[in-house]
Amino acid sequence: MSASLSTLTFAKNPRLLSAGSEFVNNFLNRQAPVEVNKLGNGFRVASQEGGPNEMATISLHSKTGSRFDSLENNGCSALMQKAMWYGTQTKSAAEVQAALKSIGGRIEFEHGREHQSVTINCLGADASKAIELIADVAKNPKLDTAAIDAARADVINNMKEFENSVPSQVIHNMYNQAYDSTKYEGAGAGMALSPWGTGDNVKVGLTAADVQSFHKQFASNANTMALVATGNVSTSAVMEAAQKNFGDVASTPEAAQDKRYTGGAARMDSGNLASPYSNHVALGWEICPASNADVIPLRILTEVFGNYDRFMNDMTSNWWIRFNVERQSTQIGYQPLEEVRTIFDTFSDTGLQGFYFTHNMGCMRDEGWFFLVALQNEWIRYCMRLTPYQVEVGKNLLKSNLLFENDGSEKTNMNIGKQLISKGTYTPLEQAFARIDDVTTQQVSDTMNHYYYDREPVLSSWGIYYTLPIYNTARRNMYKYRY
Image (cartoon, rainbow, N blue to C red; front, top):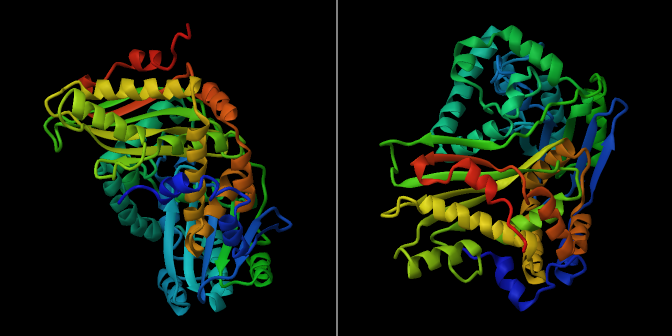
């Protein structure tokens, strides 16, 4: 069954997930508090003691990613992250790997537009050694020609996976169109650029000097880095190791980044490629940055719509299911909608919210037009008429997702790190739940009207592009006459 647990339990007990409920209080009381401290140079250190076993999760998060690339060196951030682990000023690549193996560590990388992280999972007793290793790699990478060449293969593999994924390409084209003007503004203005760079740059264009310059400019600032330790760790030991290894990192003011949103439409014709009778479409709008209080009403609204898969159980009152059933029973005889994913990405100074969906055209070549118009009509209807029950359901779904985001040491670690990088602060679960409960139906409606009503959308598609409405039609559907 694909119906969410909170959707099913809400009908039985609407206040089960309220901030003051016994269920939530019992869960929060079992969670150790997250302590966030700053070193003298502004470097942030977060820790959460306690865990179900002897394992610890140590990660270094930094405000670095493809956003800080330029059009000429797109891919530099991805190359730098991989190349850093192919040797430092004091250790060869083999010695770095030996140090990782000596603590039984497992390493993971995360790379995005504004956030990068490297995570080591190891025994809690070796947490200080893991911090020392991460610090050496982050502060003193060799980044010579041999390291860059070794990292190229890793990045090229990631690039191929990215380019062969239709959802990834459709969503990337949505970003490319949404922030189209920023990619021409030089270094630090790459919201529209590919997270993994271009083939020419990664394969031959970027040199060791380019990556070294990028590291010095964007990855050596205490104000844009954060160390997070969760699981079987000691806060005092983590602070001592952080002070020893990161206390000398230089601190410089952050440069303002360009984030101009333009909207528009980007379409790719699938021709005779795979799935010729399916359209992949992404529709989005610009929203507020991660630190803005409007994030909570917007996330509640996103949960009201939720995700959808054609194999979902139809117990829920999901709008996607209602649309599919209506089209099947009254008009075309089959369910055209295959999958829907919500998009909700917030950054330090902007954000993008929307939907990615796949529909099967079957015998109806204009099915994409029907669905996109229906989606926008429903979205604008919510700007005018949103019921308290819908908001209450959205609150409970959001709380469930927040609990899942903190399920285990690794997820909690990543959640803390992303908040510190995008917002500059960390919001504990109990505070987040209380803020969610304080949101009213009117606040959600007012927030919707501010960010969506009569605003420029961005549209991206892959498939038979002429089956979708033109951009002027999509733009006109963002408002309705109220008389």
